[in-house]
Every structure is written in C-alpha cells, then in structure tokens.
Image 1: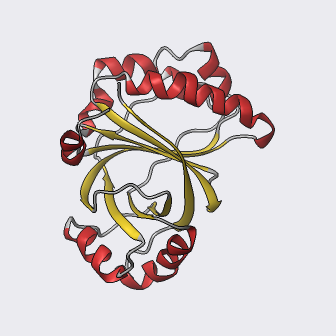
Image 2: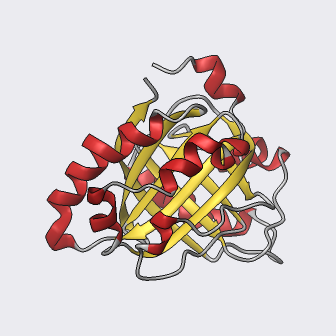
Image 3: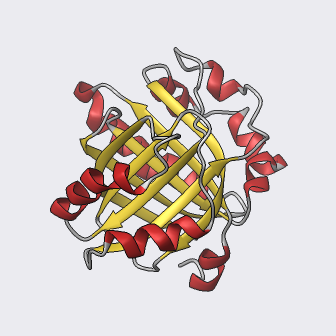
Length: 221
C-alpha cells in the first residue's frame, strides 16, 4: 500500500474521462483491472488509481491517478509505455471515444477520507480556482457526508501525441481544471451538485457537473 504521507504530499494528477461501448464492458473491465491499472501503477511516481462510473454525467467513465508530481507524466518510463501499447490496449483504444486526458497539478485537497461517490465539476475554459477554495468549499457545503474536496488545474505542458493516442478514433481533448467533491452517499453527491454553482465564481462556471460512483481503487505496489 502507498505510504499515506506520500499520498498527502502528491501534487500530480492524471485525469481521464471517456466512453466505451456497453456491449464490450466485460472485456473493458478485464483489461483495466488485470493489465492497465497494474501497468500504469508500476511506473515510478504513480501512487494510486481510482475509477468511477457515471450515475448522471456526460461521460460514462472518469478515472484519475495520484502522482508524486506532474513531471511523472513526462518521465522516460511513462512515455515509453505510451509509445509501446500492448495489443490488448491497442484493441481497447480503437473503440475508446469522448476522451478528455489532462496532466494536472493538485492545487489543494481538503479532507483525508475517500468517498464512494463523487460530484465532479469539469472546466473546459480557464477556471478561477485557488488553493484556498478547497477548504472554503468544504466548509460552505457544510455537509458531514462530504469527506473531501480536491482542486486541480491543467499544467502548461501536456504529453505530445503518442503511439497509444494514435490508436484512438478521435483526438484527445484537455480540461483547464476540475473540482472533485467526495461523499459517502449518492444523495450527498446530488446535494453538492445542486449547491456548487452558487458557491463558485459566476464569471467562470464549470462546463459540466456530473455525479459518479467509485468502482475501483488501487495503490501502487
């Protein structure tokens, strides 16, 4: 298990939203849990991966990885993986659509627990987010079922197009920032989604706010 103190200091995030055909979901799950998660989490600097499935959102799947720093995504070890996809990965990526993939920096996290549900606000235009907003939103939501608030912003550098990206049907899109509100119940996630717009700067609203359920979490070996 990853050292909790190391996780608490982690500043890097790889965020991913995507679609995949429901009729091939079993194959997708086998690939993710038996090959892709172990492969990615074996890269030095990858600490933890979390996978979510939509309850009500514009993308079915939302995944993110905690990294020591964003620089991990530009390391030779990780770039080598991107440029040498397995046959299984190439097959999956050929049917993978609706991709948002972004190297991010964690601005701040308020709370240490991991919630089973998440309200996820995605910003596709410049977002006016600052580190103090995490604790402020946590306090203003004033809901004991909200166990954490995570704030991310896109890094200036993003990965160049890779062999893996070339197997996807569509070009990847990127975000500018995100807010992830973790809760202990679906009802609390719904409440957070309803209240969040009024708690944010009206001049830079999120593009979309979705509600997700955690389906898997794995630490680096």
